[in-house]
Image (cartoon, rainbow, N blue to C red; front, side, top):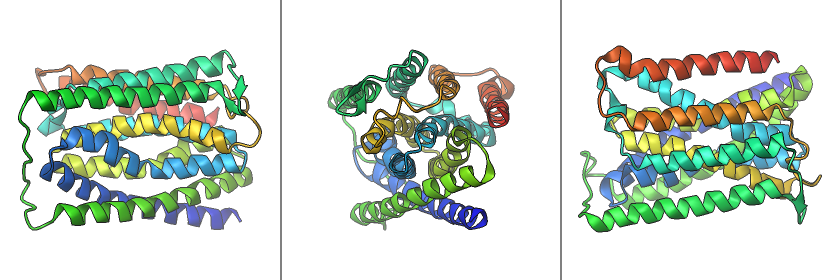
Length: 330
């Protein structure tokens, strides 16, 4: 049973990665040939599409009554996504891509900080009150998420109205936008299916191996379901579409938090927050700190040398690895 689950887990992860490569490619075409741009396409379109494994994995965990995998997957994906972002920044350090990022990602980052803060406070103070068998923290997260997205889109629309924006081309003149959109939807559906396989096989791995569900959800499943996000970022950075990459990560992170309230609807034992371990506070706190670092680099205009430039990335990559080891052993 354990070996079969591991094989299914690996196959599902591989399918997700392949689909993510195609998604990022088509998202780049859409952002370059329309007026939406990398920021919006990354924050909404690509972020949600590559986060479909988190959605299906989290909902599947809730259906099988595993609150810790559901909450852990959503929160663990935040830390892994930012880890991958800074890891790739180290790889592309000579290009110093992060100095070319739009400051508008600042608002998405602030929204991410707010959502992490709600989770930390809810778990720390045991805010498990329910309404219609759904935890009040879920309602708070949903309201903040949807309201934040509305304000971000409004801000972006004001900037579009204030300046003339024209689509730009990256040489893909022979690839129709309509075809890119159709294929984007197709690979989104493939990723959606793969996510359920990751969650169910991960639950079996947790039960068979003796590893805690919190660790499996926050590290193993979170990393696996976040592979599409990481791959899409790598593809975006390869074509120097840094706004698409940053938007995909920050947009994916806030969506990953939003999927927990969705999973709460499917959780049959009342509020999912009541059964979630306080161990998730450390994951949410790590996500908060990492998002804060992302926001800080958005404000950089220049750096003196390569070492100064890569210092934040070194801190994040090293910190994530240390956090993962202690969390897994704990």
